[in-house]
Length: 456
Image (cartoon, rainbow, N blue to C red):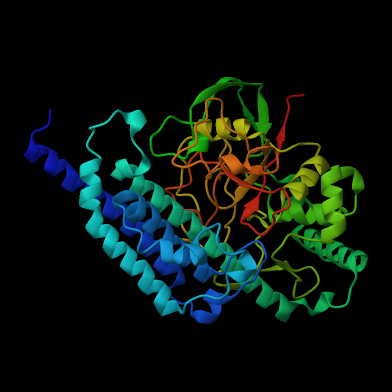
């Protein structure tokens, strides 16, 4: 048994580690929104995403709910804000009636001050006085800090998505005159012409032949998932799957390859699209990835709004702003398919640590040129998320934790799994076992793809 002084010292160390974890995530959030004012925080730019200001309030509310209300029984900073900032409060279109920026930041600051004061009591509860099976998230201060900081970091990426959507909308208004008044067939014809001219300017070898070939990935009995304590419930438990050998693209699908898909009529070739994909395409009437803007001149690269301004697409950067239906169609156009998430995870485990730091954590304002390494697929972590062929389902032996509603409501075949992380993902989130999920029609994300194929 630990002595009282030794136990007290461990509690102080746990508090210090928890605060460092929480404060690091908060600094990242504040850095991202530092230059934004009330108009940017209040803007409702897409029906699928709440305004940035709501995310700030939700981050603070969630911290107050778990650390204060559920941790020490103090609801004063959670219950009054439940309607405004909980996921189950107001519908997204009604989340525009927000407090001013200064009040939102004060709320975040006040919650953190109270959590800072409450952590010593929570750390004392973390001492192993009860069987592990009877402990809850708030009985484990290390898990609580990890959970809250991970939650904040995921919302930081969502804030970056909302900001990118706002910048794209502004740029499209300024740059999109070439498409004004055109119906869907004419828009697709115009994008075909632009894409064909760009591909020709790059050179057919550059766009089609110099792409590195796929990398062979061994099959067998492979480990999927994790038993790590600091992981989400849907990542656990670890298990074994039997996989056949397969091949995976050496890098994510690039903008040059997607331009070839457009030039070849990929958005009009019905045989490439699944039934749900065709139904989505007929409703959406799209002709290019979300975020692509008309090129300034024939033969030049299309433009894209990045977080630091409008810039030409790099032909070697991964395409993003495509949904799972588009990804499926592209893969079929290549005689390939999307990998399952088990295949993707196997490839990531084999690839190991990248030779160079991945494009994560908003160190860049958008995707950067996809790298290549000869022995394994590259860029599996960072740059862009990658669609898989798998729907979001529990691993065998799944147990919901720390609450029923994090993963369980999204099982059942309606959401498609994305893997890997984007340029806006925190390194604390980007790991081979992390599972992200969205409806297959979602393209407002920093998500692309890479293709898989079976041995011939």
